[in-house]
Length: 228
Image (cartoon, rainbow, N blue to C red; front, side):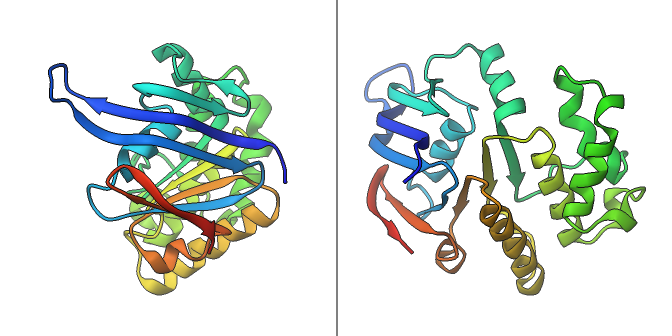
């Protein structure tokens, strides 16, 4: 098996400044190998959203270590975490999070605005990732002119633009009908076959079972982790 792209070691997460604090994650140990496709599922209140925030470097652990591509990001500053989010993690959200005033091409360019590469130097790359998700003919359209599935494809293209080490998908089919959701899942599976590391958060067990491996959370504890 490849080396871990993600390694959570004894991770706890508390909220609140006074006892009794809310203990959301309770000693999580989890490795995701480079190139692996893992789903994380659980009921409401299981800790999925908190774990997503930690994996996406949107929050820090209270205890324990989080290694992303070999770097312990547990105690990184906000500025350092922001850089990691932009360069190393590609986010795919349930609500797409596209900017309605921008075209498909401009939405895909957004992460480049916060990086070191110039927009001019990455024009060809933008065309390539838009073509890869099948939207070359929609490149000048705005989100209001697209279907839900097309909006999610734009979000996937945007997630790929900085060639991240990890794709992190949060309920990627949650706002889509069954047929469109199937198309998006097939696209994510194709990216995995190309060697991408993917972690998908979902409440839907059928969607979770599409992954290479399924991790179940219950009350902040991993209760099952194995091949789906």
